[in-house]
Every structure is written in structure tokens, then in C-alpha cells.
Image 1 (cartoon, helix red, strand yellow):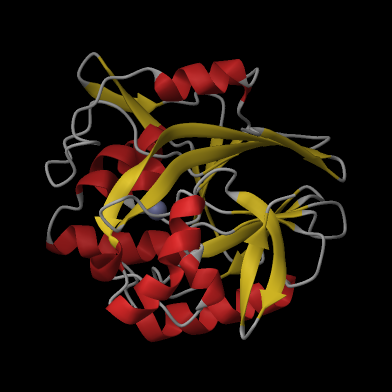
Image 2 (tube, rainbow, N blue to C red; image 1 turned 180 degrees about the vertical axis):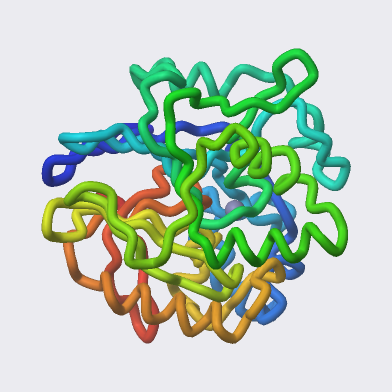
Length: 289
Ligand SMILES: [Zn+2]
């Protein structure tokens, strides 16, 4: 399995925390019919995107990107010691898979200059913090954590109504430690890192594009979860807060990168998770490189 890619003057590493069955396809994708699932079952199973009981298989991973100037971590996965009672595989876990993966890629937490989150859902902020003497502290002590202001404002508002645990234990402690930056969608880091607004899954969801003067790679976050959604971009997941907008965003994203050599680095597609967007019928595929 490929965990490392070189494109332009970037080196991209995948840091996998879990690759596992997640939610039944028919439940996760409310627009999916049993007939459409049956038509696609064979290739989905072959691609390890679907298990024997028709449950979607997802990968949960971070990307660590070395530009000529910085080391940037995109999306910080699930994390340890966090109470997530709705998800037994995530609840209060204590394994060392993630930090071992980071180490195997040649990085220590001290090497990360920036942490960027495509959005502030539970499986994208988890390793922002770790438990130390009963307190949540930034896992990456030297990093600036870059949050899209629109996304941060949305969760601040939700959290004021009723506590949102991943925001409280994995985002606010970073703010208290003054390691965060709230940025607009025109924000750039050096001449290699830009933001592409991709609302729908959450109101302030962003994709992150990297490369000198061109998009050598794009990190798509949760604008899609399964390769079935490249073929049928109109299929939104039940977790998309605005399902219609998510579908429009998905198609325009896929159209934007279709038949380019931009490496599309997905958050949750099964391994290899990374590929080039190519047209197929009235939809697309993310073709392994
Ligand atoms: Zn996710």
C-alpha cells in the first residue's frame, strides 16, 4: 500500500489511524436505492469500499505534506482518550497506531509547522489535542492551527446551545493555548497553500490546495466519503448538513479537477485514497496513480 507521494515540489504522506467498516451504505447515503447498490456492489467490494454486509468501508487518516518551506498536517483524525460513546471504535481509545504512523513517515509531533482542518467534525480534529495530566494540550506543540473562521463560528454557535464534545476537547484547548489562527477563505500559507471553499457537508467546509502556482494536490476533506459518490455526485451522506449544497459542491469540485493531473487526496476513500479525477459516464472516478 502506498503511503507516500511526490508531486511538483511536494512530498505527501498518509498517516492512517483506522481503515474499517463504518455505516451501512443504504443508511449513510439516503438517496441510494437497493437497485443502485446492487448495480455497484461488485466493484465496490473489489475496491474494499463495501464489506460483505453492505456496510461502507472508510479510511480515517491525516496527510502530512512537506512543501519547500513548511511541514503541514491536514486533518487530525480521531485521537485518543476521547469520550465518543456513539462510536465504540473511537471511544476512549488508547492505541498508538497514529503516532507510530507519524513516526514511521519520519515525523515527530514537534516537526509540524501548521495543522489545517478541512472542517471541525470529530474525525478531523481528534489529534489536535492529547491528554496530559488530566488536561487537553496541543499534540503538535510548535504548530499554528489554522481554522476557517466561518467553520469555527458555526461550531462556536452550536457549542453555545449544547456542548459539542469534539469542539470542546479538540478545538477550544488549542484556542486557550493561543496556538490557533482564524482565517478567511483567501488565506494562503507561503506560495504553496491555498483554500478552496467547499460548503455543504458543514457550512465552512474547505478543501485545501497545494503547489507552487498550480494545484499539484488537493485535500478534499469530507466533500465526499465513498468512491460511489464520484460516480454519482448527487448522492449526499446523511452527515451532510446541507445535502443539496453538498451535491452541487461535489459535482463542481469533480468537474474542476477532472482530467487534470492534480492529485486528489481524499479523507475517507479506501486505500490508496489518492488519485486523479477522470470522467466516467455522467460521473467521475478517482483513478489510482
Ligand atoms: Zn470525516
